[in-house]
Length: 500
Ligand SMILES: Cc1cc2nc3c(=O)[nH]c(=O)nc-3n(C[C@H](O)[C@H](O)[C@H](O)COP(=O)(O)OP(=O)(O)OC[C@H]3O[C@@H](n4cnc5c(N)ncnc54)[C@H](O)[C@@H]3O)c2cc1C
View 1 (cartoon, rainbow, N blue to C red):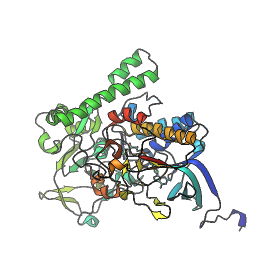
View 2 (cartoon, rainbow, N blue to C red):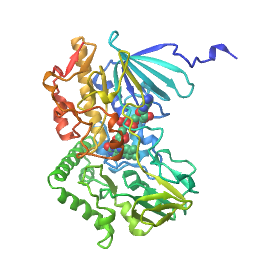
View 3 (cartoon, protein in one colour):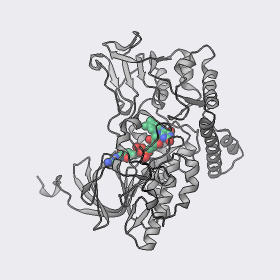
View 4 (cartoon, helix red, strand yellow):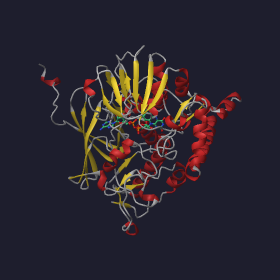
């Protein structure tokens, strides 16, 4: 064997240094790379991505019908116009992201199949040391960086969350989680039961109903949906007038955001009226005789969980046509033929899809340490949902639930670039968020108030997340409309930032 081609997989041979290191090449990581290139020219950086390609969520999920549940004018970046229908397939989103990478020459900054295993900060050197593994060769790599930009999303990509039900092993058909869709799954003329009624179930069901014998959505409790035409009138009008796409993008974004703000406020101020609006749109598709009270009327106030948009009411059309149906009941146990419900009814199935959510992963399953001490993010307090007390030179991108995630990608990027420029100008090497004297008696609360937002993955994983305080600086308030004005005005000389 040629000794020179042997790869030492046990310890890194060299250390590469970058001013900034980005974890992940999803919509957040690619956005971070774009903003560094345009707002901090001359900054050296690399994005390490464990998958074989960019896209994150949009390349992990390959189930039938996979699409966005919010519009692409706001899920798209503010700097690149979205020119098609607002609800887009994963394929269209990946094409858009591919164009961003190509148009801005970002590919040379992204390294695929690179898994970040650990990150340790040294105050002596003012550096993060990042240990990574190349998935294809097993080679161990070491990087150092001044600033760690965490764009690793919020859930584990390697496996979805499936609850343990009694007798699952007895079921003779196939059980599939949407996060790991098998390439060989043939559901033509098969009876399918989809467990869950979130955005994933609502997407899968109309797509599978086209070929399956029948698809049943089995839910324990109902979910709110918004529905309407997959088009935005103002964008169509402006396009007819041959207005520049850049203008159309900006105007359409403003219109959507204005309306979303009004709707969000209504869900807090007049929850019953907001609920009525949502339910009457469902009734318009399913008719007065359909049991909307049982199957589509949640017990919670609208917006305490994400509200998926159903383009052209396709889920409801599937139900109306008889190709799909909804059962609201609880699972007693699995049987050889399907699922036995608590009501005593048995749902027979050839395929069971568990659209039951994610495993929250607050830190990309990276082992963190600060000055030799293991870091548990749950012991920290968040600075505006993006930095953490006692953790130097690190920013995490966590988007919005009630507005598109990417709106925050752009806002956080503006902040990071302003911070990096400030540190360069002042010759400082380290910035660490710290509670100010006036914050010391502040109550420390869980990351998010369950009264405000309470999806299952968040409730299951809350203990892993940083704490929040009761002041705007010390929480992720999920309010784009406030943050769009607050973020550009964050005082970098505030005592919440300790420089060194
Ligand atoms: C099916 C689905 C539909 C959604 N639809 C919408 C929508 O319409 N609108 C909306 O606003 N939000 C939506 N979301 C939420 C969505 O996840 C975010 O909006 C957004 O895509 C997250 O982007 P991200 O880049 O932050 O994270 P991700 O898309 O999760 O990407 C993170 C990347 O980091 C990589 N990574 C993680 N850990 C490591 C590591 N240790 N080393 C190296 N790489 C690592 C991952 O492989 C991944 O590629 C949806 C989520 C799902 C699951």
